[in-house]
Image (cartoon, helix red, strand yellow):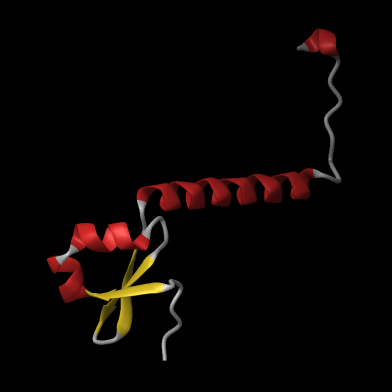
Length: 81
């Protein structure tokens, strides 16, 4: 069985019939779109997707900070800036 990463599911057929209603019912949560009872795609509301992108960017920044925490350092004088 395939793992599902959403609390709400819909079929491809139902999504075609009632796209706006499903988005409204999802209320800012992802929806697993099933094809033959298996996840085929995930429908993400725009605000959810934007938060996810911001979170991933923060994780990438944290990784860079962690990698650079122990140097090497470049000494710079304020006058040189």
